[in-house]
Image 1: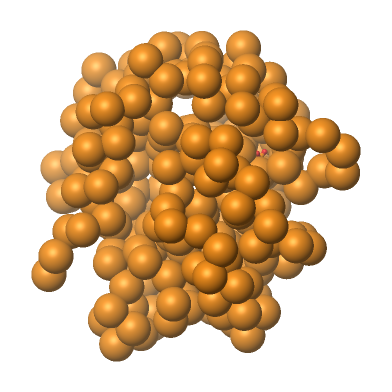
Image 2 (image 1 turned 180 degrees about the horizontal axis):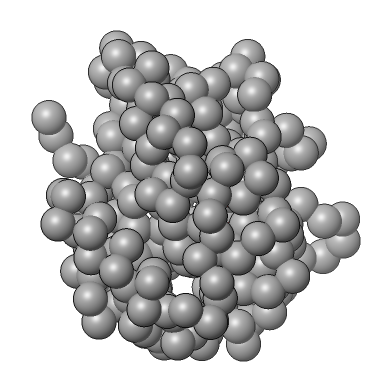
Length: 246
Ligand code: 1GP
């Protein structure tokens, strides 16, 4: 199996330091293709499409196809369930929700979706997914036992376990629209222990926050809510992308 998208991501990280992957929630995004085009022009390295409550596969497929027509950067699926698999994407964060209390989100959804990923020839990026904190949609849907924000060592334990299990990507998730983003101290503690590609998202709105998380060792920062809001988010996203690059 080729690792075309993974190699591309590793090259981008080498070139730019921390990358930004804007996430287009397939249920909230009106005009997803034009937003994708804008974020590409501002320097995003890839676009994620999905979300924890995105369940309409037809809508997802239409959005992925329309985005693919507009941009050259990869379109990577970010599934919350089996319904997050869609034929025209370049890759998928093939994730296991490591701190879920429900085996469905750890191995069963993955088993149900795996043959579709193979059939559509979507590159799977093996990802350990960790939910930090409580009260967000992904925390509720994924039946997660959220790692407390002030317990970086617990996040490091899970991260190292993910590495030992062969996961080359790790996603520290505070949840979309979270009131609090992941603390830089948790990011740096995980960074000291985990050698793969480290993704951090949830509640990142200010360039300062993004820069601190990047300096703490994140390879990729995911931003969604900010670009879903009406008004001018482009300057802010552009500042974030410039500030997190080395
Ligand atoms: C959600 O981490 C992402 O999965 C993005 O979160 O919507 O808070 O930017 P926001």
